[in-house]
Image (cartoon, rainbow, N blue to C red; front, top):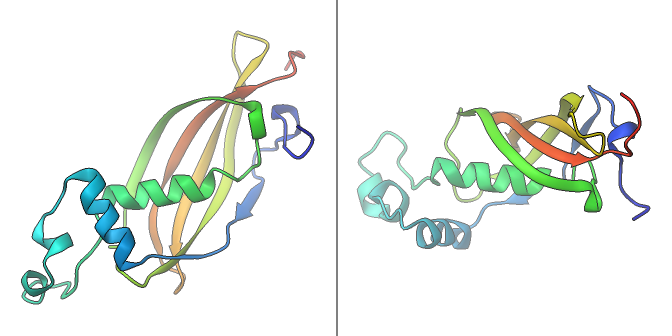
Length: 152
C-alpha cells in the first residue's frame, strides 16, 4: 500500500487536523440505541428543560467513539495497523450537543520499538474540538503498528 505512512517515517510531534462533522439527532438516537443508555438527559427533551444544560446531550462515550473514528485516518497507516492497545487519560471537558460541528486534532506523542523487530507502538494525542474552538474531549490512544524490522 503506497499511500500510507510507515513507523519509520513517523515523527514525534507530527500533527493533523480532520475535516469537520456535524452531530445530528440521528447520531444521538444511534448512541442511545447502540449503548442502551436511554437516560433522560440523552433521550427526554422535556426532562432536560429543567436541568442546567437545558438540552439533551450525548453520552460521554459517544465523544470517544466519534473522536477515535475521525482520528483513525491520521496518520494514514493503511494495513500497517496490528492492534489498538488502549485509551488513556481521556477527559470529558464539555458536553456534546445536537448541532455541534467537531473536528479532531491528532499529534504523535511518542513512538517506541518493541522487542519484536517487526512491531512498534505509537501514542497519539487526540483532541475533539467544537467549531467554536473549545476542546470537548481529549486523551491518548496507543496503537501497535508494523515496522520494517530495522534496528531502532
